[in-house]
Structures are given as C-alpha cells and as structure tokens.
Amino acid sequence: MSPRILLPVFVLSLLLAPQLVSEFHVTLLNYIGLYSIVAIGLVLLTGVGGLMSFGQAAFVGLGGYATAYLTTATSLPVWIASLGGSPWLGLLAGVVLTAAVALLLGLLTLRLSGHYLPLGTIAWSISLYFLFGNLEFLGGHTGISGIPALSMFGLPMKDARNFYYLIWVVVLLAAWLTINLLDSREGRAIRALKGGVVMAEAMGVDTARSKVVIFLIAALFGCVSGWLYAHLQRFVNPTPFSLNMSIEYLFMAVLGGAAHVWGAVLGAGVITVLKQWLQDWLPRLLGASGNFEMIVFGVLMIFVLQRARDGLWPILCRLVPQRAIARSVPVADVLPRKSLPEAGEVLLEARHVVKRFGGLVANNNMNLNVKAGEIMALIGPNGAGKSTMFNCVSGVDRATEGEVLFRGRPVTELDSREIAKLGMSRTFQHVRLLPTMTVLENAAIGAHLRGSRGVLPAMLHLERAEENRLLAEAARQVERVGLKSSMFEAAGSLALGQQRTLEIARALCADPCLLLLDEPAAGLRYMEKQALAELLRKLRGEGMGILLVEHDMDFVMGLADRVVVMEFGEKIAEGLPEGVQRNPAVIEAYLGGVD
Ligand code: ADP
Ligand code: MG
Image (cartoon, rainbow, N blue to C red):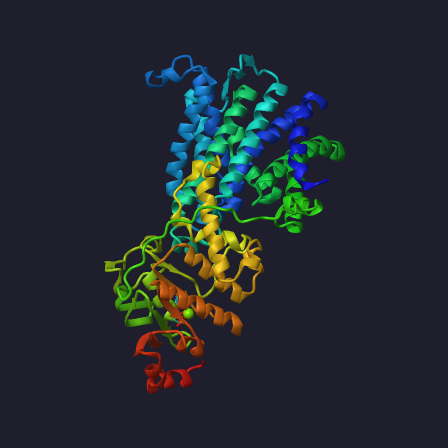
C-alpha cells in the first residue's frame, strides 16, 4: 500500500468504525480518542520539547470540572452567572481557567531544570487532585453528576456513537495543529529546546517563551479532552485526574514514540486496549481479582521500552515503505536585508575582558576590536581562552570583568538573544546542530529573527508566505557554503567538516554585520578550505566584519587582515599577519605549546 494513502485510509476507517463494531468497542474508541488528545500535547511538550510533565491529568481535570460545575450549579455566583448552563460556555471557561493556571504554573516550574521540573509537576498534579476532592462546591470525592449532554446542530449527543465523531474530529484537529506548528519557524524553535537551547538563543530564539508556549498548548489539549470526557460520562470525580493517570498519559506518549504526533494516537490505542485486555483476562488466568494487571502492565511497558527506545511509531514506519517525495525548495521573494555598516566602522570592541572559572583565569585583560569589512583572526594554542572570549563577546557567557561594545552599544550584560538582534551571529567550535533535522531546517533556525509570524498562524498554516521566504533564504545560504547536494539530509549524517560549514550557513541566515567563526576550517579538506576562504573574502568584500578563531596558520595568514595572538588567557601579540608570524613570543607559544 502506498504511504500516501495511509492517512485517507485511517480517516476512512475512523469514519466507518462505529457502524462496524459494537457499542462497547465504540466506547473504547472514544476513550482512545480522549487520551490521544492529551498524549498529542505530551508529544509536543515532552517528546519534542524535552519537558517532562507528570501533571497533564490535572489540566484534563480543570477542563472537566469547569464545565461540570458551570452546567450543573443551581445558583452560580453573580460574576459567572451568565456562563451557567451551556456546555460551550463551560468549554470557554475551562480554556480560560486552564490557560491562566498553566501560565502561572508554567512560569513557576519551567525555570526549574533537571529533575526539579518533573518533581515540580508532580507537586502541582497532587495539589490540584486534592483540590478537586476537597472543594465542597465541586462535590468532594463523590464528584458532580447530572452533567447535561452536549448537543450539536440541535442533536443531543446522548450515545457513544454520536459522541465518537466529535471526539475523533478533535483528535485529528489537534494532530493537524501540532504537525503544522512543528513545521514552521516557531516549530523549529520548539524542536531546538531539546539539546539546542544555547544555539537557539544565539540565533535570537526566546527559548523561555517557546517552553511556555508548548506548556500552554499541552495544557489546553488536556482541558479540551477533559471537557469532552465530562460531557461523555456526564459525571466527574477526582479519580481520573490523579497522578496515576498523568503517568499513564506519559506512558502513552513515550510508548507511541514520544517525538511523533501519530505515535500519541498509537500509544493511546495500544495502552487502552492492552489494559482492557489484561483486566479481562488476568483474573480468568490467575483465578483471582487483584491489581495484577497493573503489575503485568508495568513489566510489559519496561520490556517494550527496552526493545524500542523510540517507541512503536518508528517501528511501524519502518514496516511501511517511506514516501519518496522529491522535496523542493520553495520559490519566494528574497528577504529584505539590513544595510551593512560603513567599511572601517568599529563593530566589536572588547575592553579589559576578564573571565574566571573559579580559580582559573580563562581570559585576562583581553582587548580587541573588529571593524566592518575586515577579517580579524584570533589565534593561540589550545586552551588559550579563544572560545571563552567568543562566548563573552556574544553573550553566551558573561565576562567577570570588563566591557564589550557592539556597534558602540554596551552589550556586556545582554543575553546572546539580544546581541543576535543587533546583528552579531556566530558558529560554535563544538558544533551545535539538531542532528535529526535536515540541513535546510538547521540553516533556517538562523533566519529566526527575520520572520515574525507567531504560534497561532503557524498552527493554522497561515504563515506559509513568510515561511517560504525563510526557507528560500536558508536554501540560498546552504547553497552558498556548498552544501546544496545535502539540503534534505539529516544534519547529523554530514561529515564533521560539513557540519561546521552548515553552522556558517545558519549564521549567515541571520543577515549579520559581524560574523564570529570558531575554528570553521577544522576537519575540512584542502579544496573545502579554499572554498571557505573564498567565501569569507567575498563576505568581507560586501562589508561584513569577521572574527575568526583558527588553528591552521596557513589558512589564517593568507586570509586575515589583522591577527591577535592569545596564550594562557592573555594577549601576547597583535598586528599584521606577517609581523605576528615573526614575533618571538608567538613562535615560542606555538613551538613551545602542545600544538
Ligand atoms: P581555546 O578555545 O583557546 O582552546 P577555551 O576558551 O576553550 O580555549 O578554554 C580556556 C580555558 O578555560 C581552558 O583551560 C578551559 O579548560 C577553561 N574553560 C573553558 N570553559 C570552561 C568552563 N565552562 N568551566 C571551566 N573551565 C572552562
Ligand atoms: Mg576553542
């Protein structure tokens, strides 16, 4: 079967399913749908964004309880009385409430790093659960019953078969919105959260904002699922919104394939069916009822995750021949460029920069400047402090003392994101690419600041014109550095030298006036080095300033206009390449050093 028709076949079977299976199985499918909606949010949050949440069920609860309360309360407080009665207003209230709570919790917990984030989510998951159980107006542990049925187009949705279509339309909608989002400028920023925060910030991405965005979206998907649940069951109590259920949601996302949207649906399906099956069969096999199914379920989970770390979805994909689409670069207008500064203008100036790591002085009283239209090389033996200097001037790290000016503005205290906005762009000595993303997409992250359309247009794919311009620009830069033939390959599959070159393309996508390159020629072959030198000369000719760290002396000497030499964190020489090359201190540093 051609992969192209898989989605239509899936949708068609969804359409026909209620006519072909029993009422019991329709109900099961309804639950799979409800869980899928939450799990899709978790794919975005945990699988893609790398943020572990043990609290999704609490958001499902907020959605469920908001509508349960508003549609059943006999006397509402005056300020919300107008919302009473209607499930649709219940949904609206749930969404607003969830957004407010998620925003607050997100701002509080997303700053926590490492293990503290999961612990934080466990804490609020438990708190919200007990809140549901202890608030008298929410019915305590007994819950709220008598929730009215939904009605659409004048048709009350009282049975599982009617409800089925609504649930699965929402599942498909959630999947569509999420897939769209991930395939956009905002989506690339989100995909950079797992393992690429430093790089993304240096490209101007506000990663803290991206985290809050995915947290909010995941919470809202949970809320909508809870709303549907409340009107399907017509009854809520705290149990389905407990920590246990949160963990189960996480299992669904992880088992399905945490980084794949359709994996969420698969995971929700497999776990729901498996649990049902274990509940039916285990008591018959073991001759007693107990919570054995939970134990068997746990063991099975561990087994599957041992065998398939990336979940089931990638395995399923391997069984189906992959769609061989000839991916093409969109044709689009050229993005507007900033005018470059006058040649000779001092772009970057570091004054008396000191950087200490504990007792180690990595940079000591470093002074240097870079002008527009020149290539300035920073050289020195390994460990001399060159990369540290790069980090201090680009805002990736903060100087302990001293001052950094960029285009006359003090930037010592600014984050790399702010400095990127001013027109500085950089590469990293230890390449920071997103290995599973294509070469083109990696480069496009560099163009982040040249687009402005936000999350909502991205989810609805209303930003395609801008997106095409960004991708076309990324493709131009990829081509410019000589990687055109690898445009749609995963960045991780490139040779290391090419990965460095890709970093240059990414930096160029930002339309910088100052380019910082940390050992760009390392790992390149002779011809590739020649091509790189040619490119750098061309950029210099256009008026760009370039600060270059390089080990290859021949490369530097033939290219740089000025050279600064560092050793043990200090500047030991500065001047024209020929002069520096003859400087006894430099000869000593290079011959005496490990290099
Ligand atoms: P270079 O780029 O010239 O090879 P670096 O700037 O990477 O040198 O390193 C300069 C010195 O600072 C080295 O001794 C290195 O071990 C130390 N150093 C660099 N980064 C850190 C850090 N984050 N924490 C502690 N020490 C560091
Ligand atoms: Mg270095």
